[in-house]
Image (cartoon, rainbow, N blue to C red; front, side, top):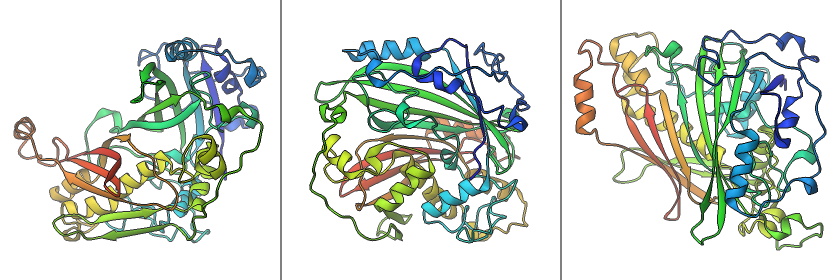
Length: 446
């Protein structure tokens, strides 16, 4: 795998969790030292930071014991804002085909895109390691999570193995992915065929990350926690491609998490490989998709995304330290990708009768089909954890068009019916009657 990163942090005076991100690999990879040609600078976007990569000497991170302890969620949020508020972390990476191929294999998918999709000029079997996606191949929506992965030495991670760059300070160190929103953009902001841009294999992309907010919250049982919102922009050679906003919840560290004594737990072995199956359900227009992830698949996803969070692969930690009795936890980002794959595989293929279209047909209705089957935005929220070995389902329902949306469509150019407000789909991840995650997908066209 080739992962070439150049990172800069502006302004130069930063707090401990971000200091290590000042290290630059430019000296080792001079071919990445020049900035990307970006049509919109950070200054133009009112961030008021330099976009010039900087080289600076790194300062050793203090040991965990030296990190200032806080006693309230409000103090923790204020400290994080004081340390990282108003700063932007910038990294560049070459988007290699090997990474997206490995993600496809981890997900149990033989092709990057469904056969019907316009971005499927590359039907090769992903299990053929000689068929690594080459330059120009579109990276499926959501698969960018396999790039710009966390970095740093092990002793810079939190006790639970998480990257601490945007973690709340102690004692609020127990992290869970809460939700977020991804929005794909059109080239230069112009709505056109076939829809929002994609990151592509072979590009040198740029990621810009900033802390949006950190606020104190109360959980249902009255205990304190910190909600942290982070926004990532992903830029390609034609401009801004994707804005990815993520929310994490940080709860107080459990006493056992910092203990050096070993804990013995009862072990339940989850056997068998991961499974994915689509099932037709009476009374529902679309099939439901059932997933069951094995510990092996979760470990591979953790490794691929360089995610050291122990709840996803260390059963003893997950059960004894973080009170996840069933075992290792299915990643929130993994379920998010599953939602997007379900849309492309199931919803897109049923929404406008893809079988009626030929890839060589470029009629107005073809344009409309492509825009109606490309995701403009997904907003999602994690509600209840899922675990290795548990089977759960994904289903979707299309929202009824509201009166104001009908009026908006009527105001569109009648000769340009392919452009207008997108379809809205509610997507649900459920297990045994419990709603575990829900999302809302908006398409690029009607």
